[in-house]
Length: 524
Image 1 (cartoon, rainbow, N blue to C red):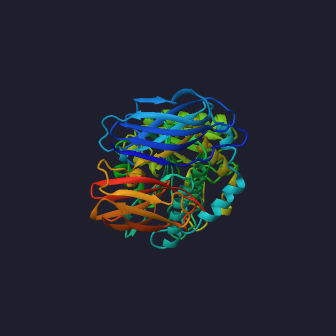
Image 2: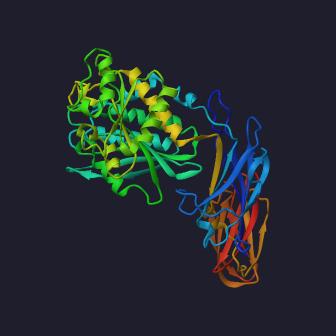
Image 3: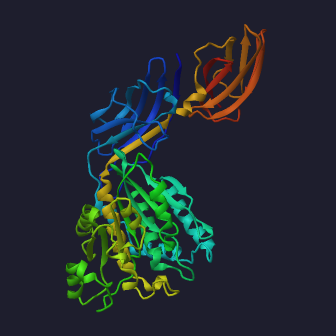
């Protein structure tokens, strides 16, 4: 029988938003694997500031944490509803037919049943922060004429997603003599991880412009939505994406739709931001594409009644995106009521209104995926479109802030917030400290134990045997080691420990298929 015993202290911070009920905190404290008995025992501590009883689940992943779909139906112990906060909680999982349990990642989730306040999330978006972000992002960025700027915004996205604690990846995209990746951050849902909503913007610009509205405005909104929502847990997953090569025909988003979506994932909706910062309250500042009045008479009537002012956010969906469009409008009305919005529903995939297909959302439409384009109407309102005059000072920061709040509210509603804590542990870390099913052929003594200078390892009863000695800390990290050659005469070997922190360690001795594990203490 293999038996593994490891102590881990991995306490994630409580997800506390000001003025809200604090989320529970879960800390896995002990993991035991009995391979012969087919069980994993996960011990954990559960804390809740309000001392609320929680619903606790154990989940397991066999793909490094991308999906938690392993069968964990055979569980017992402190799991299920009405689990009171406290220390020394334990869940036993009978893992059944999993051939290599050490490929699994386990996690414990505790939900206290309170729903986080979406308005409190929305209110964290401030004009000052949006203005500062816009200054940082609105720089020349083009794959041929301003490569350094494009690299800088790529890195800004990567660093922001990494700092948020997301699963971060890139998808290489090449076009027109250049290469620039799609940048992707994944915030994994705690219940329906394969059910995903995307928040995105393209981060390239045309040559010879700062591209403040097109599309630094969308990028800074993506960054801010990601930063704020990373503080919370959700039932469904969110992906935040910076698409490349949009200006060359939505190349990056097209490649993502074709080959970037995992087979196990369902994209339930896309919130694509395409220029959301230009605003004008002047009459006749809003023009319309030809034929607009035929396709959208109600929208045109509303714009005309307001003297064609460019003071609204256009919410563009196709026929298949009608439920998503309705959800977005509802979120705006509930959480950002001072934002004027005009929803449009384009027949089919928008072939009758090609001006409404000119962004990354259209690639999702063509693949049958619900998607919205959120826009200030680009050149039909903004006279600086695709010119050197597209600079930060031409944008309206209050309008950009309201639009960002709207996207955040809609994303939060769709993803469904949970007041939950979670802690996880990768069982592959345990393989290095496994006690073998075959005993070590040598008698072993370790002294002194505890030790403050050296560990003396005495091997007897065997000769001509090479023994590998490895010392692991309590998290499973190797901290020292050497090879020992047993001579059968009580050979003594020393392993220095004076430079190691005081604490508990595991000394693993292996010879061929045989092995043994000795718990040792270092005390200074």
